Image (cartoon, rainbow, N blue to C red; front, side, top):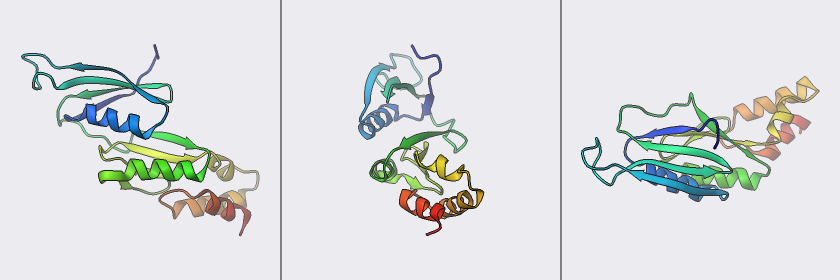
Length: 158
C-alpha cells in the first residue's frame, strides 16, 4: 500500500472522473468502487469512493457534495518525453469543458489542475548559460501548451 494517496473531493461525479482519468492515461486501472447505502447523505447506490491508479500512483475520489472545489494550489505534473505526448495529454485533458492556462498549466473538465511538462524543460530553464535559460523562460511565459521545439530554439537563440 502506498504511504500517501491523493484524495480528490468531488460533488457527485467521482466515478465519471475516475473513468475519465483512466481513459486519458494508458497505464491506469480502476482498483475499487464503494457506494453509499441506506440513510447516507447521498442517494443509495451513489459512489462514495472510487480508487484508481495512474502510472502506478493510487488516487481516491470521493463524492461528498459541493462544499469544496479544486484550486490551482494543487496540481498534478505529467512529465512528457515528446511533443506528441504533450499534445495528446493537452488535448484529452482540455476536452469537454477543460480550460487552457499559461506555461503548460490547464484545468480539466472537473476543475482539477494539471501541468503538462516536457522533460526537456528543466534542462532548458536551468542550463549552464543563464542567458540561454532566460530566453527559454521568456518563450515559455508566452505559451499555453508548451512547445519543445520553440523552447529549444529560444534557448539556442534561433
